[in-house]
Amino acid sequence: MVSYKDFEKVLLDELKQALGCTEPIAIALCGAKVREYLSSKPMDIEVYCSKNIIKNAWSVLVPNSQGMKGILTAVSLGIVGGDASKNLRVLEDISNEDIEKAKELIENKIIKTHVAEVPNMLYIRIEAVTANEEVTVVIEDSHDNFTFIKVNDEVVFEKDNDKNISEVEDRSFLSVKSIIDFADNVNFEDIPELIERLDLQIKSNMEIAKRGLREEYGAMIGQIIKQTSKGSVEDEIKSMTCSASDARMGGCSLPVVINSGSGNQGITTSVPVIVFCEKENISKERLYRGLMVSNLIAIYQKYYIGKLSAFCGAVSAGSAAACAIGYLIGLDEEKIESILTNALATSGGIVCDGAKASCASKIAVALDNGLLALEMAKRGIEFEYMDGIVGNNCDTTVKNIGKMASEGMKDTDDKILEIMLEEN
Image (cartoon, rainbow, N blue to C red):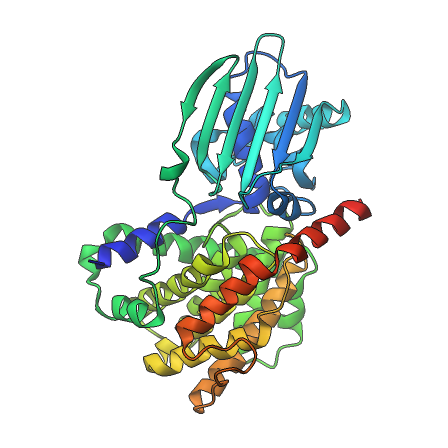
């Protein structure tokens, strides 16, 4: 039988603090774990990544790298100065000396990258050779899920793949109805760790949003929205959320609390809800419950979509945030389901072509669409069954989107990577 502890576990599993875009950070984490077993400078480093890892790590700035980008930067910084004990904050303590050593590794061309021909959407394997060791480390299915470590001929760690904490873990109990029930009725005294995690999400994600609004990062989408705003709450929501993404994609050294393995999704599920509560003087208790709704509805969608795909995660996150705002203004379950259906029926075709500056503008589009879906639902308007891939209920629509993303967009994903590699 499903209990409120199951909902809490899902949130604690998915809401983790990470520094920088999670795909290059996962590569750096793998490199930092390799580093733990090296006694001397590596002479050869072979990096094998699944296509989605390559796509998302290809163009994005790596934090604490002085403006360097991509896979080679992530690998080299992880190996020369990463701290695997800090998990997804692995590059938090990178020094100028580490950066120079990383540049040397790159310039000497001892790091070679390859597409890993594996079924996993999320897979990283790094093989490093020194005068004394041959070290192999593998991360699979989740950004910090080590499954294999080998030093010379000895396997020092191996995890049973059947028991991996991966996206195949059963979360089919999630639905708009069950999520609202949890958010409405859970006793805060029973979930102190979750409240602490939500406080961290509020603090971290708003801090980077404010940084992005003050300083020049990425394409400065958030600042443009702010400068052209007419002062509405909706513009403030978009400005702050996009500013956080601007900063994160632009190499800002501040961490964020992620959702479904993504910092942009963690930002987009949280910042709109926080800003809305601030502007409308909504209590901290209601803010917590709104964040539960937003985070869980995003996770609910990603359970069917998959953590990495050609489907832009801003869409699922933006629609989840709109659902949470609907929840906060007192809309009932049926209307919240309408928000989700309307949003997915409209912007469910935005593709993910990797992590980069344009993620912030996609977030702006997703939030515009989510807020439109909210206004439609308030007026009793919902796209009908068989309007495209709209199902006969909200849950079916979510599953239909999942099929389209996880099955139908596989070729799209491959073609996007092919184009990116051709261009570079």
